[in-house]
Length: 165
Image (cartoon, rainbow, N blue to C red; front, top):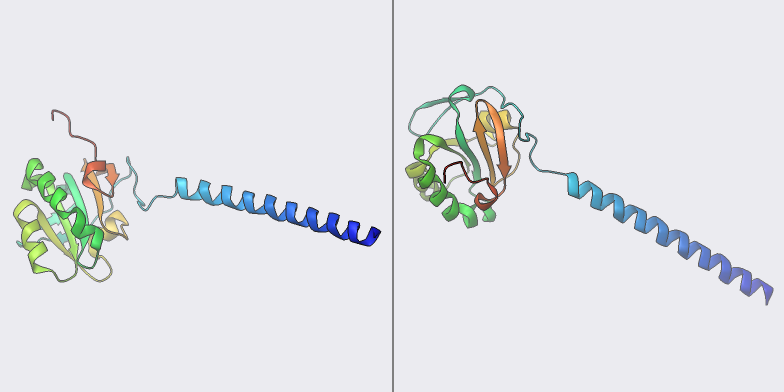
């Protein structure tokens, strides 16, 4: 009988140790996901240098960039879901202050974006604009002023409202 009691006590202690380790791991995972952001550039970060050409043949550089920069992909369901909101937002901002980097083959979406934004086609590796922003996912929205990121968001409604609106 003493062996059974000792075995049960040992088993109980092992279960308690396992529970404590599991709780510790869960706390660490929550802390990492709370601080992790898909945006490499945060507000205040400088945008890297780049040179690109829009679908209209206009040159685009980091120095000429001022306004909203959006990254979309043809094979991204979230991009297609957020497109109507982005188009409405872009109309309010004015075409000169909105830039869209679009990856993939979807002429209808490019045409819709070109009506309200300067569109830059993205290469398979993301292209020079994505490299300058160190952006690896879509949809991604950046507000840029003076060569620096002012705000980041995954959806239009997460962007700050511009002053005077």
